[in-house]
Structures are given as C-alpha cells and as structure tokens.
Length: 134
Image 1 (cartoon, rainbow, N blue to C red):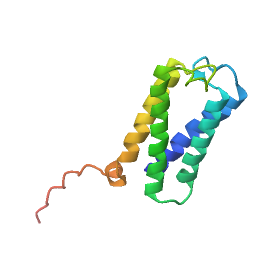
Image 2 (cartoon, one colour):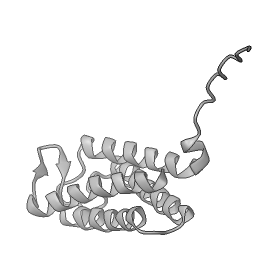
Image 3 (spheres, rainbow, N blue to C red):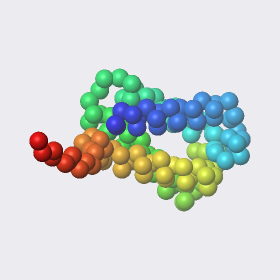
C-alpha cells in the first residue's frame, strides 16, 4: 500500500513540477505557485517518490520516503504562514491554496507513512456463515 501511495503522490507532484516549468513566473490556474525553486523541489520529491514507488525497495524505505516528503510539505506549509515567499526563495509567494495543499498532502503522507502495511490492508472480519445441519 505504501508503494501505491508513493506512486500516486509521485505522479501528482511530478505533474505539478512539469506544468510549473512551462508556466514559470505566474500562478498555475491562478491558484498555485510555480516559481523555479518550488518546481525543482517538486521534481526532486516526485523523482524520489516514483523511484520507491516503481522499483523493488523495502517497505521501510518506501515508508521513509513518503514520510520525509510529507514532513517537507508540512514544513513548507507552516513556514509559509511566517513568510509566503519562504524567506525570498519563492518570488511569487505561496497562495492560500498552495499552503492548504502542502499541509493536507503532507499530513496525509505522514499519517500513511506511520501506519504499518498490516494496518493499511487489514480488513474487518466478516460474520461467519451460519452452520448448516445435515
């Protein structure tokens, strides 16, 4: 399950990075920041997620990468409250949508990284079928 999470996050973040390289200097859909530093960061994070998502690495490594990416996204969201430009790194500045996106994606990634594979795939026991008498 962690591998699937890494794949999904990697694709989403990768698409944002690639789109950002083509729309540099403005807001993507008037919602999201696409400054070069953020696009490069997204590309690196997406690459890490896609590598662990599509190669044969241990679940521990996959969980670690998902957790680290989540923690970085949370950090970017929280730091944006102090300075939307992340202290000059992002000239356009993070928007409210960016901040919300970073915090939600980061929190989901961290929570999923913390959960064990067993906890993610555990299913509720179903009621046993009634015994038939012969």
